Length: 79
Length: 361
Image 1 (spheres, rainbow over the protein chains, first blue to last red):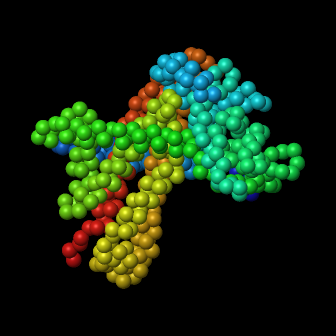
Image 2 (cartoon, rainbow over the protein chains, first blue to last red):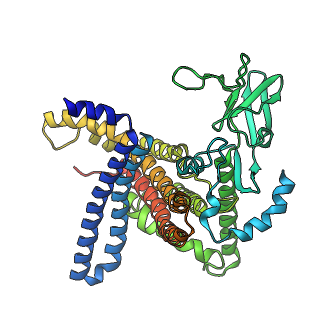
Image 3 (cartoon, chains in turn yellow, cyan):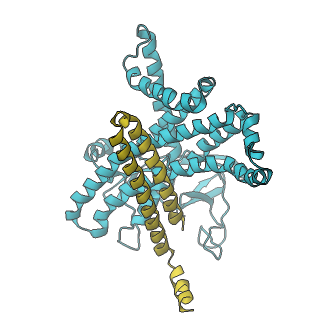
């Protein structure tokens, strides 16, 4: 019961929740970009002749992951 | 106003050529001396009726833009400088027996009753009547500049081909031809297909260069640029809507069949997939819209936040670190804006390609 009261009191301050949301989005994006980067590096090490192509698509994929994180940032901006 | 602006312009230009600080309008609030970062950033991100350049000696210097209103008594036009930098609804402009006030970058009719020009309802929302606002705002002004620049660049490019021999690029063509070939070879041909891609090349090239030039113009921190145009949701909405309309209009029988009656799967699954695929038609352009909007707005917010750190901590010793990081982020943004223009173009091509794809089954 006290938890509900606590939540009701804190819910007034949406800013804190927005900050937590932005932080969670950053964690998600970090994991995603890390996965892409790691796999791209591994693939490049295995097949150095594919480096150009891999680099290009890795950057595009990172931009996609980043965009998802930015969706969350926009939502927390709107409050 | 304009004379004062031109007089100061050369000075400002050289003083602030090297710093992003220029993009910060120092908002003077009457009641508190504290620097409100949130307000400053949001002021920069949003559209406005005047192009704020800088604050000099306690008063703001801005480039006035025309306000065009369709009111009850017909068309009304005046320069935004008549509001005298007021954004709180205090200064009244009188035209055609009507009184206008500007409040939070929106034009309202001044309230006739009481002392206050702006009246609110119980939730704090303004209930004044509004005329139809078709003004040339900061973002529209910025868009006109980008259109002129694009026209100049590509007319000059086209001319270089008439003087060169054997169709080799010369001059500006050496810069634009690789980009055009990149869009053709890496985007249009793989996504749409060898057979149909030529029809969509003008659209894709326009999309790429228009988004790219507006993104880059947003990164340049001094006067005729620096507007957050491609970080405005109306701008990205229109571009995504054009992609949506083209995709829907050119779509062939197979495209609709794959949405409403997906071949090759059992009937219950077909019924289940149909509404999802139908929503997908709308979600695709919406994600295009939000992706560009969020990326560019976030870029502006990050650069401004890093600069604001100096004013939050009120310490000059933080300035080198803050400046270093903002330059670093600005350089990353140069990469990001190009990638975003490319991704928008690529996904548009992908959606168009999926709509006209011919299946063999």
